[in-house]
Image 1 (cartoon, helix red, strand yellow):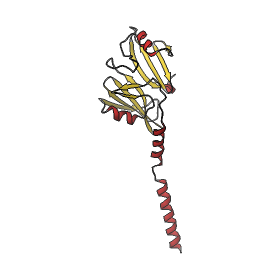
Image 2 (image 1 turned 180 degrees about the horizontal axis):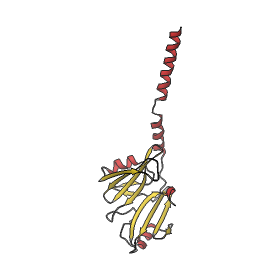
Image 3 (image 1 turned 120 degrees about the vertical axis):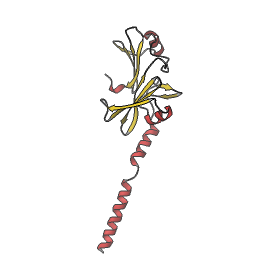
Image 4 (image 1 turned 30 degrees about the horizontal axis):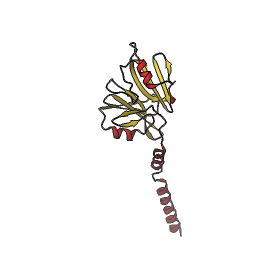
Length: 175
C-alpha cells in the first residue's frame, strides 16, 4: 500500500513538473509580439526599405538590416543590464532588454550620407530641417524636440546654424 501511494505521489509530482516546465514565457512574449503596434507615428527611421522606430522589437529589425559594421555593449545608465550598439553605414541602433524583449531604444544618424524619412540630414540649414519636419517642436537652446508616442526626435543645430545631430530616443526617459 505504501509503495502504491509513493508511486502515485511521484507520478503526480512528475505531472506537476511537466506542467510548470512549459514555454509559458515564450508564448506570452509571442502574444506581446503579435499584438505590438508602434506608436511613433511619422517619427521612424528607414534604412534599406525597412521602417523601424523606438520600442520596436530589435531582433526582427537587426535581422532585416543584416550584419552591422560593428557592435559595442556597455553597462546601461538608463535600463537594467546593458546597452547594445549596432553600427551601420551612416546610422547607429541602440537596443536594451525591456520586459524580457530586446527593444530599440535609440537611433542616431551618424553622418551626412543618410537622411531621415522627412529628408533631414546632418549639415543642412536648421531652418530647412525645421520646415521639412513641420511645426510641433519644442526648442531648448540649440536642440529642437519632436515627440510622438514613445518617441523623442532631437535635432541639434551647431554654431554654424546647421544640423549637427539627429537622434531618436525613448520619450519617457527625457526631461
